[in-house]
Length: 269
Ligand code: ATP
Ligand code: ATP
Ligand code: MG
Ligand code: MG
Ligand code: MG
Ligand code: MG
Image (cartoon, rainbow, N blue to C red; front, side, top):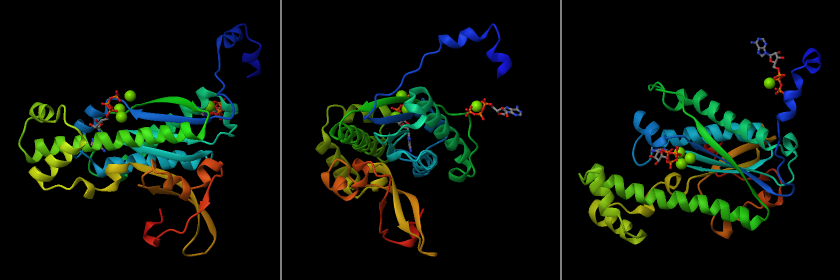
C-alpha cells in the first residue's frame, strides 16, 4: 500500500463518502430475493410454500447470525430476511456500506453454498441475487412495530397464496380466474373458501408458513457434555403479541442471549 499511497492517483480516494449510522438506534438490515417469483418458478418450488426453500433461507440467515454476534433477532418469510443489530453495536464503526454489504453478500453466498443440502437433486439454474436496505429505528416500539409489520405481511400473503393455490391446484381454476375470485375478498372470505371448498382449516396450516421464522440466540446447557453453549434457535411464534417480548426479554435489553430450556434434544440445531 505504501507505493499506492504515494502515487499521483491516490487523490481519487477523496471522492469516496461514507454514511455512519446514527448512534443509539436499532439497525435493521432487510434482504429480499430479486425476482423470486421467477426464481421459484424456474426451480419448481412447491406452491404456495416450498418448505425446503424456506429452510434454506433460515440456514443462510443462521450463518449470518453466527458470524455477526450483534444480531439479536432475525425474522424471515418468503424470500426476505430482516436482521436486527443491537442499538449499542459499534461494528465497523457503524459504517452503513460495510454493514449492509457484508450481511447481504454473506447471506447470498450462504444461500448458494448450502443449496445442495436442501435441493440435493436440483442444480441451481442461475445465480440468485438479493437486494438489501438499512433502516434505523430509534425506539423499541418502532422496532416491534417493524417486526410486526413484516409478520403481518407474512400472514396476509400466506392466507392469500394458500387460497389462490388451492383454487388453482385443487379447484382447477386458471391463475387469472383464481385472482378474480379472490379480488375484493377479506380475510374471513378466504378462510371460508378454504374451509367450504377444500376442507382446509387455515388455522391448522404449518406455523412455519403462517408465522415465518424468528431466529434467536439462546444459551443452553448442552444435553451431552453439560457445558453452556450458545445456539441459534428457530421459533415460529407470534411476535405481534406482547407475550413474545415478555418471554424473550433479552432482545430489547440488548443482551445477546438468554438461557433457554429447550423442549427436546431432537430440537437442538
Ligand atoms: P479486508 O477485509 O479489510 O478487505 P483483506 O484481508 O481482504 O481484509 P485486502 O487489503 O482486501 O485485505 O487484501 C486482500 C488480500 O487477499 C491480499 O493481501 C492477498 O493476501 C489476498 N489475495 C487476494 N486475492 C489473491 C490472489 N488471487 N492470490 C493470492 N492472494 C490473494
Ligand atoms: P422483487 O425482485 O421485486 O423482490 P419478487 O418476484 O422477488 O420481486 P417478492 O414480492 O419478493 O417478489 O415475492 C417473492 C416471491 O417468491 C413470492 O411471491 C413467491 O412467488 C416466491 N417464493 C419465495 N419463497 C417461496 C417459497 N418458499 N415457496 C414458494 N414460493 C416462494
Ligand atoms: Mg425487492
Ligand atoms: Mg423478492
Ligand atoms: Mg419478497
Ligand atoms: Mg479484502
